[in-house]
Length: 58
Ligand SMILES: [Zn+2]
Image (tube, rainbow, N blue to C red; front, top):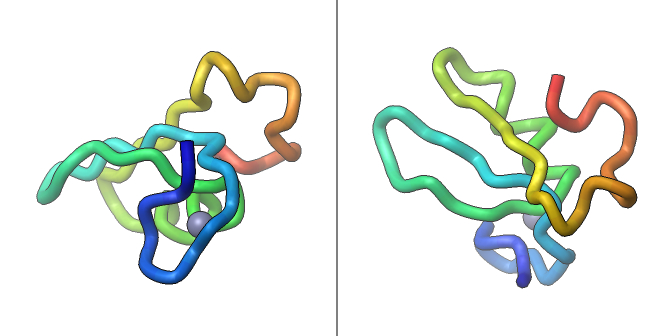
């Protein structure tokens, strides 16, 4: 599964829960950026637990 952000072809590692939008899979790098916004929750995809960098879901 690929990251759903525009022009990003990285492997999705996190499921991003966005209160004002759709839940979507994104890569760890995008999860780090997007999850800083209020209300956004980043949940690791179960299949990617081992590859998730530290802090990606913080
Ligand atoms: Zn991405």
